[in-house]
Picture (cartoon, rainbow, N blue to C red):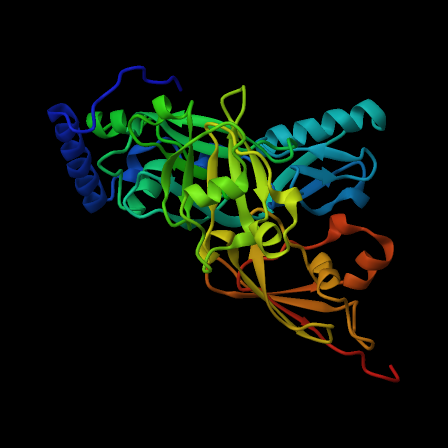
Amino acid sequence: MGRVATKRLPGSAGERQRNARVLLATALLLSAGLFSSVAQESPVRSGHQIVPGDQVRIAVEEQPSLNRVYPVAGDGTVDLGLIGRVLIAGETLDAAAEKIRTQLEERYFKTATVSVEVAEYVEGNVLVMGAVGSPKSIVVTSDSAMTLVEAISACGGLAREANGAEVRILRWKPGAGMERETIIVDVASMFDAVDFSKDQYLRPRDIIFVPRLGDADQASNEFLALGEVSRPGFHPYSEGLDVIRAVMRMGGVPKTAQWQSARILRPDNAGGYSIVPVNLAKLFGEADMTANIPVLPGDIFFVPSAEHASRGEVFLLGAVARPGAISLPLDQDITLAKLILSTGGLAQFANDSKVRVLRKAPDGSKQTLIVDVGVILRTGAFENDVPLRDGDVVIVSEKILGI
């Protein structure tokens, strides 16, 4: 989607008139419930695109040993053993099956018959930042039909000073580490024309950034501070600017912020953003100067609140070293066996072959997963590990002695 080159003055009569039309259109469409019906066809009907965290069921008629549910790893791959890791994130189910079929036929079979379906959709947050009424995170699943316009409306709509013509969706690039692609959407024109055919469906872990008018002119000599900072907004850049100096210019960071989860969104040459983690707790709490990295013009310095830094909690109970509530970080997938390892491991008499995960399904029903964590830990088969969700209860029972 192309950029809009025209500029508007924040206080002009034309801008005030545009804002009034945007607010009116938002109110009318919200009251009529039209967003979902006028947007493009539902991604579930038109072909789900696989995202990291999805659980996919793969069947190969010629090799039944491959037939099972596979977790899509954070890098967008599944581990198929015979042919190694295959990148399927971003593909439709049919395209993923074709990709696996091609690789199997290149190496092992004259003809391979492959099917792929989603066994479980990943759930995650969409973070809405910038010039909206109430920036926040919104929970979505990978099969949801939530659109960009719906997310902005759920956050109070575009602010008066918003540059609605250049709204950005920052999305993880499968297999590209911490890099994100950028999708630029002219939301203001959609409101003006009451035509939402170019609206965009959202995915878990998308970041939506709504710039303010004049941001592009300021980016060359300023950086933008967002989130839990004393003075959010644009601040001047000067030669040699680093994290310590940037924090001073944004008025400091309150104690309620997630200091260890700060990050810099840095524009790249392709028009996207890369993510640079910044651990303020190490820098200011431990005087670890390795965290005092340079801040560059055009950077977005984001310090999250507890809500934005976490996807929720899981509860670890029973025969484990450290039972209790564990926060799920926003930018990292947490799996069952790795969580148990990171919290001190299992107790001496733990029944590691039948660890239970109690989970509420999207329809409200309760599910129980039985996982052989012992095999995963002993063999290192972490491709069989189970991603955890907000609200999961993990129960590790003790072995019954003598049996």
